[in-house]
Length: 403
Length: 188
Image 1 (spheres, chains in turn yellow, purple):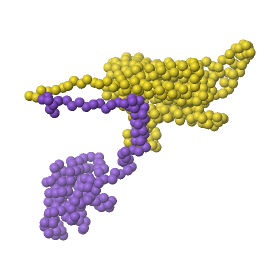
Image 2 (cartoon, chains in turn brown, orange; image 1 turned 60 degrees about the horizontal axis):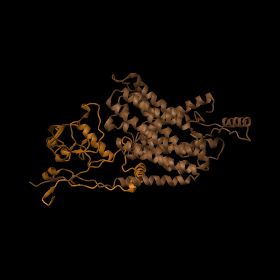
Image 3 (cartoon, rainbow over the protein chains, first blue to last red; image 1 turned 90 degrees about the horizontal axis):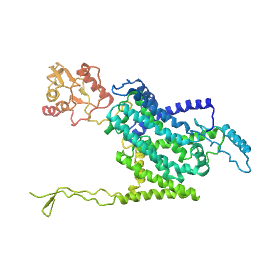
């Protein structure tokens, strides 16, 4: 890991934190507006122009509500759970390059015509050049990159399960159990789907993955199946419909946050929105080339930086829009369907996809071949699923003798 | 249903066949998303922004009552108690008095005429019962008050509703062509 300027980092943290909190607030507003539009309603439009100040009203409401703590809860963990949830959700954002970025320099290999002294000098020069450019991420050049995000992302389940268990309520506990089972199940296809990307880049560093796509084309073109699996998995990770089982109101009242109120509930709900932002960034960076857009990324100077910010923001907004539209399109899965989808469909598909990527990489085949294999794998899975269901169901013949 | 001496009690329905196209899910999801997006850009219903935007009510809407005036500006009511009798909610209270000498066309007139707007169920039966078309329901719907007493509309108030609706041009529709009700025509 390359070292970085502390004041610069702290400044970035403050700015990024403020922007994320603002974005989360406006995401709740956008969610309400989009829901309303989809359902042919108008949505919140009373507070401020077009209801834009609604978020302030909502936030104030959360803060000023009576903070009820049920007597039967385990107080330590009850208070800890929302904090753990939000902290881990925010931590995952620390490695995301949210603006223009350049990859950290690779180590200089020591060869016959590059003796060790020269190699060290060369490397130091590379590092100097790297430091002179600005990368917009809180922790730029982190070599474990996205693995850090996955590790931290898995910790979110602690917030959920602590909240559910410490609430000492059946609804909360069942909700948190479902949620943890879901998150752990979907971690696997989530991780496996991006393994193909890592294989191609040869790094898990996000800036390097991004840089690879700038030069070789976006990964969504070469690995559409991996993108699809990633997309579905992050829906489950964010507890968004159609995978919002932990909060299925009809069965579990409020899920793992049944016993929470006021701002603690607000924090619990914020976790999902922070996740939405982070995962949208990941999808944009891993599969859609981050700030890269053909023809727009060659512009230099301040204008170029602004354009890169805008391109990335638009990609992220696109994914957030998909999150919100899918919510009103697909009904909720049953729990067995949810598990079957993860273990019987997505993990085998991810494995086949990974195998194809390994073969292509080993044999040095064109990456475009993987586009074909992705489509073939997908259709083949559909064919297998269709054949399985075509068995004739034996029906009991209910008859009644005439009197 | 009888087949070979056996009554079939259950009619089995085949599940719709799920083919390859449906099994791929993505086309179906795309269709669903298209429907969702269509609703955003082409809402199927239009919401009225009520306080800013007044609703367009049908002319036969049954809202607040009014007491009609005749051409000379007098109250048209002849205090016959038909409306009070017809009222299922007993919300009309009339005190009749002999008509003034200057009013040769009637024997009685209402000294007081009070409608309890809170008790009224807005069925419109008073309007139907009235032989001289003196009481009518208007299209005024946003009826508010701070106390129960405020919601007792007396004769002056009901006449002012008439003046207001005439001025606003929101006269209720007449179900009959004539000026007066059927009883009035019998008299002439």
